[in-house]
Length: 281
Image 1 (cartoon, rainbow, N blue to C red):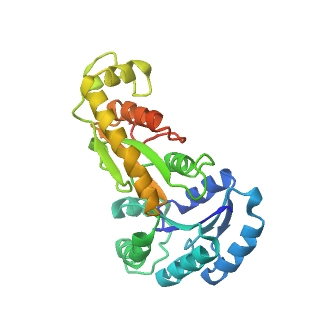
Image 2 (cartoon, rainbow, N blue to C red):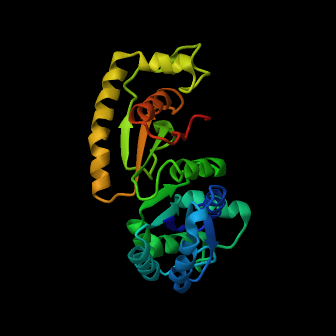
């Protein structure tokens, strides 16, 4: 049985990008279908779902979403298919304002000002965001990075029904990611930025990775974090959590956090790649 996903969120946050990324992954994507038709269409799509990685409904692109109706649809889908989930795409208000001012589109939520429209939509959708199985904040990532994030999360290697674990590295100087479940701070480790020959490189380069991982504090940190996650991940799965996002942070997000996140991925045998949010900054 393929997965079923309801994709919604703030206007301008990136639903179109998510839609195209899922299509590229082999999902059957249905855009802007009236809520009252989703369950029936979901049944028809599921009947021929063997050729698809999943079925995704992109909800609310043309305007306002009715939260109670959408949550009722998810509940009915879960009763019939057991795999229905909600993915909420979000971004900070200032980012959404900048995007709308840049493309000069009219915001679908009617209000006197753009800021009022965004505030009104956010208040309307809060209950959906709270109920979502996964939230992706696109405020600090570009379109290509969002596509990469979708690919890393919704890969065939993470089988339907299993807890999907994703890792990301980031730099505290660029802001704490708002869409993660667990955060580990590795800023206490010696910083390759202050080693002249390592500064232009990243944690994906062997000299930097060796420098970071050869430190005794790094090995101690890795041992403790991996040991924690080895028992915690199954417990999250037992509680029915569908997605678990783990973030590793350093100062700039280019050296220590990248090397540590890659090593955690290797030790935990997480099949999908790490999303390195700030590696190119």
